Image (spheres, rainbow, N blue to C red):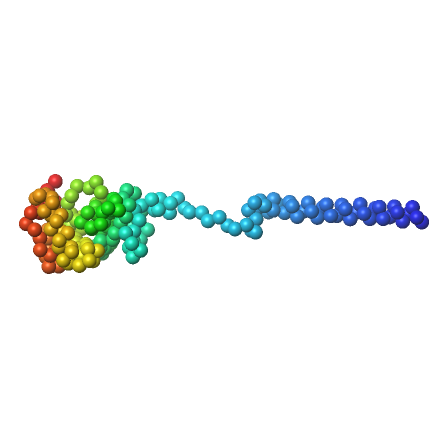
Length: 215
């Protein structure tokens, strides 16, 4: 009876140990059987990934301030040079939306008159097109859109410039200073001249009229 009892207990211990090992093996192998490694367990925090497209957008100039917002579709056509950008105006015409941007190349640049223009058009089903870039030859923007739309954009440009300058008087001084400093080489398109006069801005006579054939 004594040996039989010991043998029975020995078999029971071996059976329990085997069951324990089998259960442990199943627990450890479950993530592998389901195609998930332990390192990617749901217990771990998910890692946020940024698409390559969004990374590319981050290399574009940043908004001049928090209130400056443009659609990502416009950002995709912006040149990657420059440090900051401002939205000078936007207008819809003939099924397209035109965005006029001012690009700043240094934090020393404060006046919209020192910014470079970018003109971007968005059309449904076609995406964006950069019509005017930093290296573009100077032309009136009416070359790229109906004249009425160009005039509306230029009016928005100078209204924005007046706001950033802190009022008409400050902008008037800034414009006169830029025109006089250019010594007869400052260019204004017919639409810009019209917009400035609509806003009551006096224009120094030392400027040149920018035509589509000037350059």
